[in-house]
Length: 216
Image (spheres, rainbow, N blue to C red):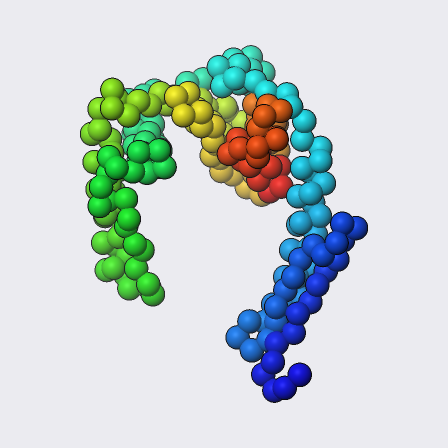
């Protein structure tokens, strides 16, 4: 190859080429990154083969959380609840009914690290959430709840459940050991929620979410 030419590396698998990495001037990929990507792909494919249909409704998930982990619903008047609800509603409207937000849908983050530009962008996002929050529920319905699991005196896990658009998410914090335990618990929760045979066949968003969480 001539000076400055790149090279192509192909990592093969039992079913043929698995990954193709192009390295060269301006496009080098570290060996450690290539190895990491390769094993992540193997892990993902292995987990995909293990996913089977065993679905539960969100209502069943909530009842299970209450029964097994003593989960309690967070007040819908709390600041944390209102903040998360507004953020989720804006996100759902952008995905399902972007026409309701008009020009507020296409907010572009600033390039570079200009502090004032970043501040202005954050203010635009907050304004978009305010506009979304004012859209009446008969136009865009949302049924959002947060359930809290007390892990210790200081540590909590919060599970967000939205029943109209079928959203399940979670948040938690703590030291390294606690985070690992709560990450494991969240995987168990999502596995209990599960997927249908149709989700697996069509690789729906519900299926992709489960796969992503199990691979994390």
